[in-house]
Image (cartoon, helix red, strand yellow):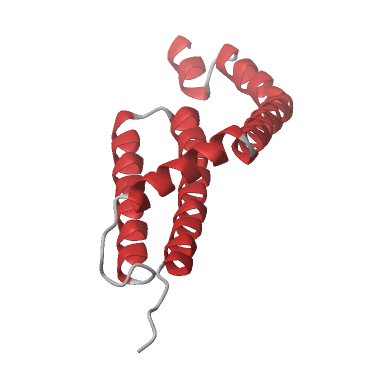
Length: 143
């Protein structure tokens, strides 16, 4: 009988958990920007619940797949380490990029709003002019 070395399998599980933690960190950053942009309490609770369910599902898949139905203590720690590594490396760039895109979208919205207001000016002037002129009914009442 040959003894199977569990070390390569554990290293593979650790690397998979690190990658899964980094993916969870990326999803958290995107959900965080959505939460900050919208700012509604019910949406915050929904996004937090969605994120928690996603992390639990990822951990379940790791346990059932790579670890062969054995939850090891290093798996959640490896996921946490992957999320932290994401946060201090590529996460900074993603957060900066999401903020810039949000700023660009807000500026585009302001430009579109001012353009629509510019288009609506003649209509507002026409409405004010119509309000100042007495209607046909008012003219007949005065006579």
